[in-house]
Length: 256
Image 1: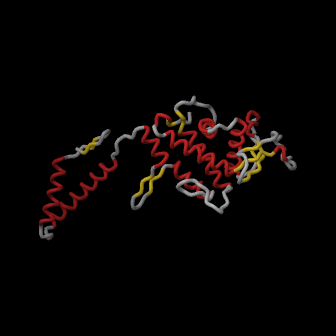
Image 2: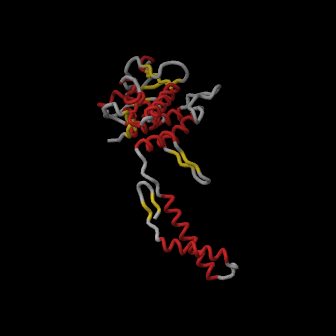
């Protein structure tokens, strides 16, 4: 019997011993007896299957271990790399925005205002809002990206609305405006100008009226600094890692 903390693999011990003995007999033989060769071949196949099953059985992880692996771990062997989808998204978003893959810091003398890379960061907010919640905070309603921004930042509602609207505009048609058809969602109606470098993460003067027949006046344009959006998500990721030690500060969220 092969055992772990949570699961047991039952083994026919007589058959196990017989297989080991068949292999020993073949090794000691002159290697000309076909009967011994076939017995050893069958024995090796059985032991390989047994080893595969015992390797696949892993003890149950604690919630702390699950959270920490989600935030940090990947495993590698000769043919496969296993990595959490959060870490895969962070790696790819960093690469597209000319940031170092391991730290998220900006590469010097490079442009960092990638739209495509920023979409990756915005999608990670969806992921974080679905998967994590600080233990001391009340559960909030709304989309996953809104949850992430409420749980882990001090942004006000207009700023959160603007970032959510930019995520819709970028992800749905790679555009610079978001005009919901639902009249109850006009808080997400924005016409954007995006930039990089210094400046606030979001700058709003007046609400865009939604007209598309002519130029949008400057005071109805919402400015979003893409570098600041990226840095906001990097800050949230660092916060998640701090909260995960001890794991009592962070719980797995839910989309419900």
